Length: 361
Image 1 (cartoon, rainbow, N blue to C red):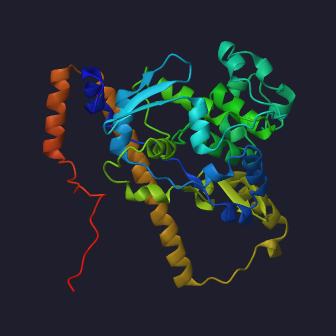
Image 2 (cartoon, rainbow, N blue to C red):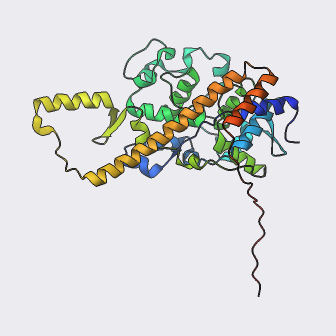
Image 3 (tube, one colour):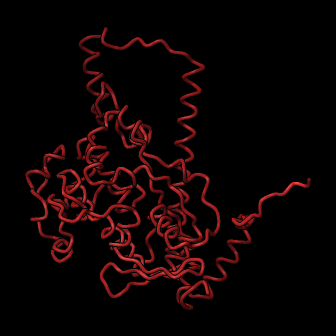
């Protein structure tokens, strides 16, 4: 059977309406061209260079079944689930083994103490306060008061990647929770992070909080492949286009100029001040209308497509919140009416076991 029980089957009807947070990829070559080599070196220290550039391949229906059947095992990171009829049992060690993120035995580097953090999440001794402040443009009395836009530009970029990789978010926030700050601090201070532990702990939160969006798609797909789960459904066409690019960071109010990153407001005000004192400092760059228009149009289209997809995810989240307030009968009636107004797309089943063609002699 597809589901463990009726509860999982009912949960699936809600989960299948939820969006999937896209996990972006990193192109090392592009990062080197835009002054982000130091960030690549920090990922290399964590031994994560291979996972940040891993293609974003996932199958929504497989994720829906996984999260609907998700159960907590006896160990604090042990997970039970079922996908396409295959039972899955794994923990943080198995995740690290599959993703090749295991911290080597006898590692002499500092390792993040997540056990201490979980017991005392509000303790300030998880951070070196003075060191943490150096990553921000202004001081604050507590990490809880930290705002993302107060991070120095390159640190905002590092934080965006870490939070999307380890604690998948859709990027529409101005503040950070303390766990994200702890992970960012460990990343910047070269403290080794147990990737499998963090992933399993956050996966298990879905077992008790159904309001969350689905995530870890490309990493879960690697686990499904390890357990030889047959592919079900199709991978969204737009999945491969999600990446951390210069354009993505520019939409976060950053600009790359003179081989350094800065906030757009600061860059604009400095430029205006310089131009007021020295008009000759304004660059007179020749404009090629056709070429510039084509490039701008392409960049604009990419941005619009991404914003529309993110808007769709927010609409799905609002719809899910509404469903939680309904009875089972009301949910069924709601879905029937929705499907009548907006029929779901018909996806042709693709056979993955095609027989080779033969030619007549």
